[in-house]
Amino acid sequence: MKITFHGAARTVTGSMHLLENGRQRILLDCGLFQGRRAESFQRNRHLPFDARRLDALILSHAHIDHSGNIPNLVRSGFDGHIYCTAATRDLCGIMLRDSGHIQEQDVAYVNRKRARRGEPPVEPIYTIAEAETSLKHFVDLQYHRWLEIGRGLRVCFYDAGHILGSSVTVIEARSLTRTTRIGFTGDLGRIDLPILRDPEVPAEPLDALIMESTYGNRRHAPIQEAEDRLASVVNETARRGGKVIIPAFAVERTQEIVYSLHRLTNAGRIPALPIFVDSPLAISATGIFRLHPECFDDETNEFLRRHPDPFGFERLRYTREVEESKAINDLREPCVVISASGMCEAGRILHHLKNNIEDARNTVLIVSYQAPNTLGRQLVERQPVVRIFGEEYQLRAQVEIINAYSSHADRDELLGWLKRLPRLPKQVFVVHGDEDQARPLAEAIRQLGVASVHVPTTGESHTV
Image (tube, rainbow, N blue to C red; front, side, top):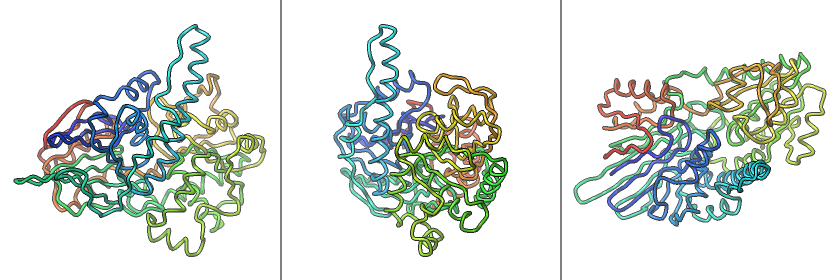
């Protein structure tokens, strides 16, 4: 089999890898590349292969950097099945529509500026309608169930423990003389992550593995410390009379923070503050979480027996309407506001930051990875002046960071997962990580005894 790496090569965005088995062509993930506007448009709109020649797409999970360019793939002529878990299908149902809405809004803003300069309009990468059309191609598959997807080709999913429905994929190609198995981690979760089960390893030996490396050279603080730190930040900010503003991804991170705040409130470890989830997408995603308790770990299922809704409690309010969102900024009392997007690049979080970062009583709490060139990264770096909606704002609010909530495995967890495999693969391809994370992980994998370890560049091909 031939593997060509078309995305998430020496970077953490735009996951996309092409497998070729004779005349069969299978795509692993079809993520949206996120970065500078002009480069992002070119890379996302113009696919590096003929979509019409693809036989199938295998989707590891619903995060936009793995699923977000599916509507453009279908728009470009793809007419095969998209295989994923049921929870991933349900999440994509809301996330791809939301992404199409963002594309349309983005282009409307750009075209207003282009019109003033006398320039012709540009089109969105895809529209809401095209996102909805792409959903017709989804076919769901349960964990641990093999499915034939082509001649001599079958696929099986294992729980990756990263987000709801995330999967480790095994693709098996059989011929008269040989059976080849390729594994794809997608994004691996952490051990003892709240809500979800721990990452599973495939039961079958692998010949090759495509492995993520988001935190391949970093060790996270223990997950158990995350709630302690969250309680400390909420209590300290409340004593100052301020608000805690939490930029959070609508899927997984929002639900984890809500679950932790529920537990802390029940235990009396934080004051009875108003808590707002101000993100229509996060509200819809939370509804999907409620539909998939089969993905929950034992601790969460035990919590469910005592509290029927882990994502709802007395002090918590979900705000869907724009007027409700605006009213939060008029509050003059301590509260917690959780809003998307997680990297502060779009959505309602920008309005909350605009209204609150110049007040030293407030805290901006960062709970997830912030990519270069994003507003979230500028906040992490505590740049004294940031731009929001084209205007400059002084960063006077406190900025606190809790990395322990990361849903990505760290270096030790990645290597530990690899060592749990039935045997070490002959080849490992390290992807989905900046070079300062991918290269050290690759070296550590070599030291485990894997002779052939590569950190591929975009467009690079290898034979398994």
